[in-house]
Length: 279
Length: 255
Image 1: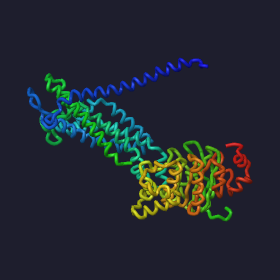
Image 2: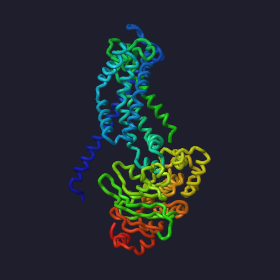
Image 3: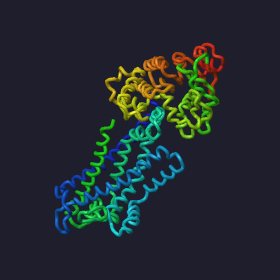
């Protein structure tokens, strides 16, 4: 005997299943489409010159973006030096000792910081670094990106540490292992994989930030000497080249996009490679 | 109690989780070199009681304790007592096997010694072998000491946790329902192990299973609603209990 509502249940089930599957398929196709299109457009403009030469003067074709590639790497390095230690150590505090009012306030502040538009971060770095130093610089750009990294590094470290089961902490404490050693040698290693992927995601996100660089790192058609001079960076180059009227520049903008993507991918893979040896 | 030498003395112990009181005014003496079982229905405070003995109760936020626990006359809650040092003298095995997932078998057993400052390789490998032998696990794992601790069966993992606790040479081993997540064969192995271990270490075991208490313990304490109802030689508790509640519980009338 077929119970009442059986057909309706089957139909609704089929409908909802297809709907959820469709949405997940859509998400994946959008990603694949973007990746594929960038690769398709960018691959034609990438050659040895693009990776090793400086941009040619306006009007000439060819040249490369070596300065922007190095500039982006320098900016991300500086951003990580600021964002990762502060975010990671703060996250350890929040997860292990932040069960109080102060912890609540820090969490709230981090979420607010995360919600601040990136261009405002740029204005902030402009005010505290560019104005007093009277120059645009890699330093100012790195600081702007570094501050942007803090909230996500902090919150993802905290969340992954919280996922470590209480039974593991208790196992360690019950052996007479002091709390700090429990945190450093038992809890953090158990969460390291997650923490590292959170941080690489964070890095990938700021790698593409353009707005905060416009008036901090600015741009540069030549090599940027040291850390206290304006520098080219891939996102700003993409922006500048994409809105230009030259066909050759459009090609190079696509190529820059592809290189940026590759940089993020390399950071991702090497982070996983570092953790590979761990059990 | 009956001429045995006492090791741990619990005096008017109370324990709370926030406003909820889990242990009410318990006074109890744990004899040296014997197995003491703590039985009682779920939620009667058995686990909380033994977690007070190695100061693990206070690890839970908002938990607190009052009263005294004396280990050879020394108050574990005294002003100079340090929880870290207390836990080195009183080890613990938990309900679910919890080996460190990022460490190998060897490192799991060595963890307690290493992380309390012992670096000498010979001392470590001797201690690892000795502890694994005491936990009756050596023969099964001696060729796979570099495998992760989590790659073994539940019963083996629990014996690994016992070896890990034994490696720091505690005077007392607290076992919190060590067999509740295991099958009957693994359970039998652990019970056999308890008989062997009591020659070298005093054991306090919490158990849900009355047959298990009858099989492994010398003394049994019956807890109900956070209070100690009766405490005596195991045989006496299970044959001629003094209190009506104890009799009702062990004959399966409640709990």
